Image (cartoon, rainbow, N blue to C red):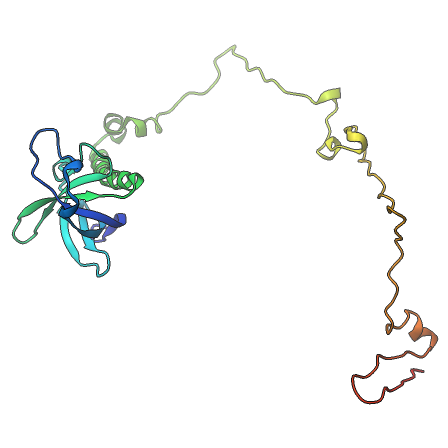
Length: 256
């Protein structure tokens, strides 16, 4: 797993700025970043391999890496700094792997929720490493339960034995709700019947008769079409007239 690159965060587009030097202890202010100092629009990816973590700024079309910000363990606050006046802007420390030269640039997220996900991805990786170290310490100790109680109290509480037996002389009171009338009824017995009343337990459900036809409408079946044979024609041996031909003389046929 240490040799596998894991993508913790992706932002397809963000703005990268050339920023002025920080003048005071209050931090960088994104309000001082000028529009003319925008370098380009980049894609940001947070990559992790084992314990190593880095932020990559890449070209949105070719994927070429513009700059890399390595995040040493325990030094997140030194290489990634949120802007003092905006939750969508950060200052990251880009470093050249060959010459070890570095430069600070500003990044601007369009959405506040995306900037929040970026910050959470960085902090969660740090917390995951700390938890992994605690688990390794617990496994290597002679008394894992005692070590877990000291390092991870919330996890050790899951393995503590609890006596849930009732004490001598104690009682339990249960409140059971009974249906009205004292007779239990099934689901169908509680369905509404005619008039909106409920059916009595143990009895069937009354169904209303179908409504009578309105405005004198007849419910008789529709009359057959002109060339449809009557239903009993085949049984009585009566001649059946076929539909007229589309062209030429009309032919007649008799079915005996």
